[in-house]
Length: 244
Ligand SMILES: [Zn+2]
Image 1 (cartoon, protein in one colour):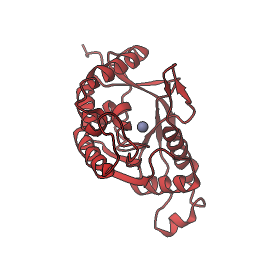
Image 2: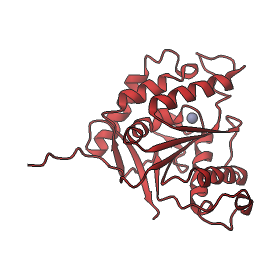
Image 3: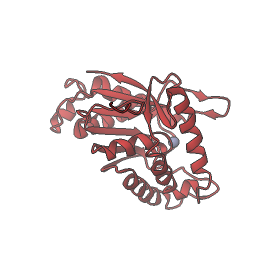
Image 4: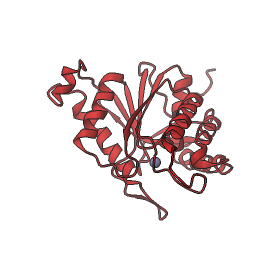
């Protein structure tokens, strides 16, 4: 008798190339790191595109942002290595004051056309706040907005940003988009096997989480919450768009 397949969304084997677009160096580790680690283990090629390098990331562990950008670049590379991410792209925008400009859309379109992902992961630009405790960071909204606009229609339409054609970047159609942080998720990825890796990757951002004693508990509580929604023990939740 065949064993029951573990639940949760299984990404089609044909979707090999993954691009994750985020505002800050630790955003992916907080939100989608379990999914990324799982897909990387499955042999898929994952690229992170980070719009800022986190130069405004001051906190109790890092009271000054002097020389912070190279530190955050190093931490991002360490975290990416832990997750199995193959490539990191920094766009170098200033942290904290992002807007979803046409320039950002063009820059993200350039990345999409160069990386040529089957799947793009980004945040949900429509979410203004979560519960009663967290006002969604404007940078998160701005990047998610520009990322979705880059995926459609800019990346697949040669007549948009013709200067990219002149750079030799041909149109590219993204097949699926996984939107993290959605208030109405419909897709749940089982991260039971990669939750520990996700925690380790987030702890690589020492300038942000210090010794990170609270990391395991926080990420576990989120994974349990999303798992409960999706009928799994530990999950990450997405709204999934299938574009073709
Ligand atoms: Zn962030």
